[in-house]
Length: 307
Ligand SMILES: NC(=O)c1ccc[n+]([C@@H]2O[C@H](COP(=O)([O-])OP(=O)(O)OC[C@H]3O[C@@H](n4cnc5c(N)ncnc54)[C@H](OP(=O)(O)O)[C@@H]3O)[C@@H](O)[C@H]2O)c1
Image (cartoon, rainbow, N blue to C red; front, side, top):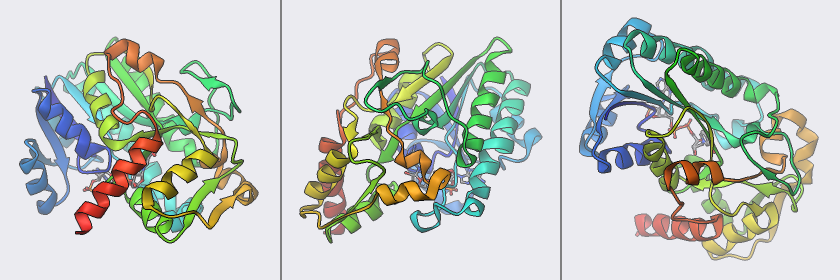
């Protein structure tokens, strides 16, 4: 399948491009710098320089493609995460950018659109499992995700196939936040946001990338892209600390994060998402069944890279 990827140089995009190329797809990807163009070429993809905010340029770039995969985002750094203004770039990408991608894909007569979203849209479900029918929640930082999902639904409404990926919390080599988490865990500080008995749904970036490739053949709709066993936040913190080879001396900010209200709500709520729909639709299964195995492999890969 001829596939065009936006965000193909990011944390989830790189493994997605690798999986698409490995599955035999002909992959083009948006680039914004020469350095990233060389990187994409080395991965077996064709770099295309075009702006996400130029609809005629995008539709020219999409012409002749069967599928467009939109994984672009520009999340704030860990330190800036609670500042609403730091979300501007990512909100623009997810509102204006995702709408542009749909307009351009329709103009270029592309049949399949895959759009990144997040499992953190679901309302808090305590200990209960969360499938794709569960009610979602609206809070300021999720505005862009809802807009991106609405754009993908608009694509499906024309009779084409719009696929929405509700990713769990990414982690793995190449994901900036996780590399910072490992560095903190090595000195005994591990992040726990919200109640320690609450659940956190996660996905290792290579499994997320494999899911992108698997879902190209799926029916339109929403799919949770999460591992098999969401851990409680207590167990997640322990898994991260063990992987980094340290006993945690500080698990923070814990329940204090609740004081920040909607600014941290995506991470303080309890979401125990199931991947049943994804696995039965595609046969995909995660190589890292939970963050326990995934964090161990991530810490090992980062240590190898440093040697
Ligand atoms: N579900 C989740 O847990 C989740 C979701 C999203 C992000 N994150 C985390 O947040 C951190 C940063 O993520 P990120 O997605 O911002 O960075 P990232 O991993 O570097 O990926 C962002 C991708 O979007 C592209 N991009 C950025 N601005 C663009 C624009 N204006 N037009 C077109 N493409 C654009 C980037 O291209 P360039 O390479 O040219 O910059 C890159 O390919 C990572 O650690 C990631 O794990 C987590």
